[in-house]
Length: 230
Image 1 (cartoon, rainbow, N blue to C red):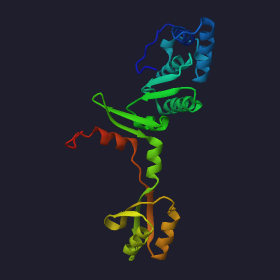
Image 2 (image 1 turned 180 degrees about the vertical axis):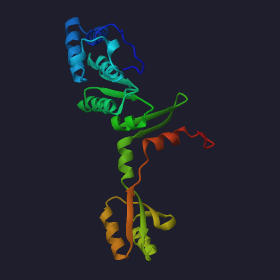
Image 3 (image 1 turned 60 degrees about the horizontal axis):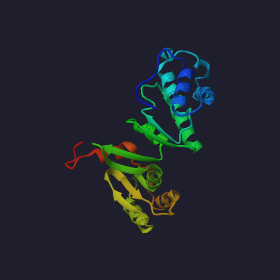
Image 4 (image 1 turned 135 degrees about the vertical axis):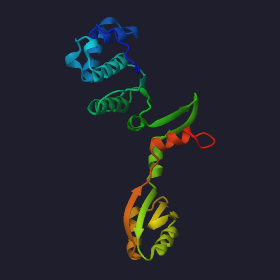
């Protein structure tokens, strides 16, 4: 699925997709059947006989996806699949990509500078800089690791005792200003145990969040030059 349009503007959508499926090696009759199926799958069944030049931007993106999947590939490249889409069209495109991914019949590679789209569609991420691999990460492993990393804000006169008590349970801590505290939980320790200790030490946990490196954080770290500049 290319980023830029590569249509024959006066050709109907279904005819174009049939042609692309034929070029991919399908017999003419099977290519036509697959073209109809692909158009209905991406939600363009009612406009499949209209000329591609009359399609809106969102419809063109969906038509590009239809031509990319009509011949039943084992490997699918999507280059900026949500480029220029409004929020409803973007959501529909993301849902289609997730459905294709979860069906499990093909391998999916998404190329995009929209990191939120990558997070929603991909399990693994490869970041390139100047043609070389700058970073590689498994997003699910990152999410599992981040579930053990907490940031909290506490209030209470015995805050020091609270820190010592949770350290005794195996937590790693890094105190900050005004009762802020970073905590890494050991395996097997539930968050409710922290609340129990806080209550016993007369400390209020006013705010508690799971800290997570977003894909944006990972990307920015990978893009940093040796001197710290981007």
